[in-house]
Image 1 (cartoon, rainbow, N blue to C red):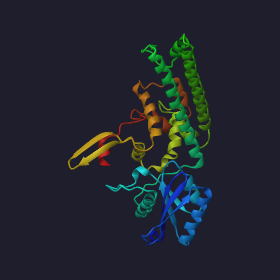
Image 2 (tube, rainbow, N blue to C red):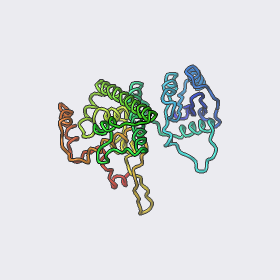
Image 3 (spheres, one colour):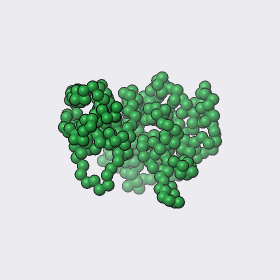
Image 4 (tube, rainbow, N blue to C red):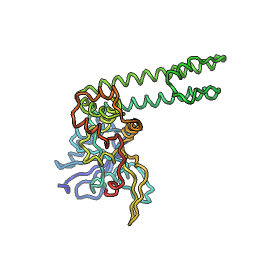
Length: 342
């Protein structure tokens, strides 16, 4: 029964947990603070279950830097715990006071009212794979930065590569190799920049190999192979999608998935007027970034090259029909009419 549930709101931080407990039928909360350690969380679980006297205990906290460890530890202690999407928590207009105690109590009250939206926690294996993909994304960003430093240093000295050719191509690297600087300090700086580029490129190649090995695991092999049938999606992008979603079946419809990825347009409707804007860009930005990069391939003529033909070998017919359909694109525009119906 809902009236016999003990509701617990937790404002989680790296060192402490602010806890607010709402017993059944009570409006006066019990508030206290505990350490964010494994032993303290076990004691908290025993304390909550003992006070509930066999009744159900439901706790929640906001998704953030603490991850899902707290949720797993409370579940192991017999407390049902949910991780709440912070961006979907209702906020009072004009509220100017924010403390850990107030946040914990607010979570407990809103959880009892049933207006919070929980996120789907990944398993330990899924979280590890997600961290691997994000580590690769961080290495790719590092490579962009270290390359940018060298290029801008050369620009400051009037050394500009042919603007009609692509940077970091074979020709560009050969051009950098042929540069000579009389000043030994400048030679040292350029050598350090190039060393940083080489090290980051090695890191990126090593992470790509790890992702390719992970794609052969039974948990990911089939879904990755299906996604690789689409133009613009190879192993790395497919693994990012699979690892970040950790289960597409948790979405009720394709529109729900598009909304989760922030690919639906903003809508402001009042009376007879309706204005549609840019995509919302809410939700998981890692998948959205990968899909945007993959969609660039759809600017070109829809030809099937040798690599794509090889990726499609042995795949189910229903997947190939979807991948080769004229209406099939990585980011098909979300229709205004469908957005209006929602």
